[in-house]
Length: 220
Image (cartoon, rainbow, N blue to C red):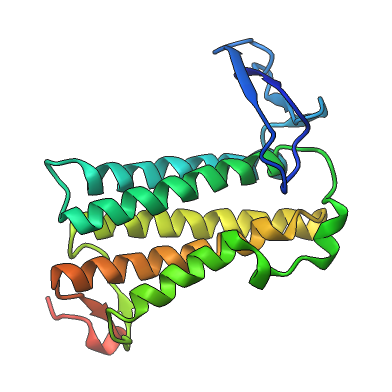
């Protein structure tokens, strides 16, 4: 476990948090426990650790997508590169904010009782992008089978990691309430990533393969 020093408490509505990493290893977690922000000791198998660990994994997968989309050797187009770099950087930063909230032993702040996702710029930003992408492609009558393009396949992996993170958040929330914006963000982000894959397909004029049921499966 990395030893960190926090410059302030973890609050979901604040950008005043600063983290200083002093050491890469401390040996403190060798027996399978770790400390939440505030010093509360928990098992590394706990839902608290799993929930912010899943957000960390998602940040990394989004980094793979962003790197593939922007690397001159692999980027499909300048437009896709610019859009991906802008949006995914923003999302990665918000996910770090979510991870900080999830790593805190503090209960949700009072504002959480009246939370409104429609007024949260983190959520509405994704919805606006989804609506913009939606103008580029038609509705589909089946499930997309990933693999038609490398970038889209990477994005589908990120989408499914996001859904897994959401499931962990739901389990944790059922035991002890978490800040509602984190749950809402996980749900909307997976929607965004699906729309993103379809936007890529539309821009590249790639033919999507769809699964329409067992009767439509190809013969071998």
